Image 1 (cartoon, rainbow, N blue to C red):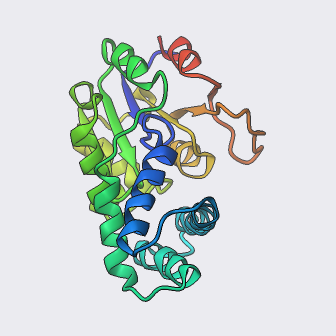
Image 2 (image 1 turned 90 degrees about the vertical axis):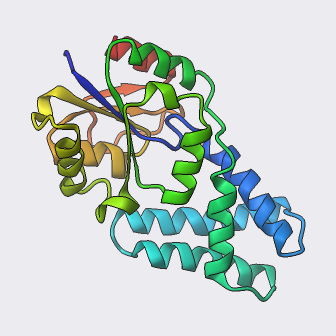
Length: 227
């Protein structure tokens, strides 16, 4: 099927969020006077993943997410600190790291030869804009849409409606959404009425309630589908 515009998720589709997060968490933990250990990192990952999952499902607000994850982490570490201030430090630190997934830059460069590319992300403004400005993909991206700036988020249809309006193209058949998350990227595409490519490098099982139009297990497979 021929498309005209590609919407790309950011984290774990283009950027290696796990690697960037590890660096930022190391910096923040150091600012609390501690050295990051594997147990500390594992605890934070568990708490953070839970909050983001609940955020995608609209069970918690963005403010509850950002404050809650570090309130839990600080409690686990047994230190005294303001969760809001620690979160602000973390977001700033995360914006300093723009680590790409292997093959992502090549994929973006090749797709940009045929399509206008837009990044659509539920990430946080400070972190995402900081990383975008430092990223080698920046010259190939026509626009960056961050849910925190839009008062709505993936997978809400309203998020995509605002993206369509900003781009100036309202026909959903002209778009395709590429992303790694079933709950935000693929469900978001379904809600918006656009086709989707599920980037699934770990070969996770499909969810019959949220089926993508296409499935790719590598960057090369994404290119094969779209080129």
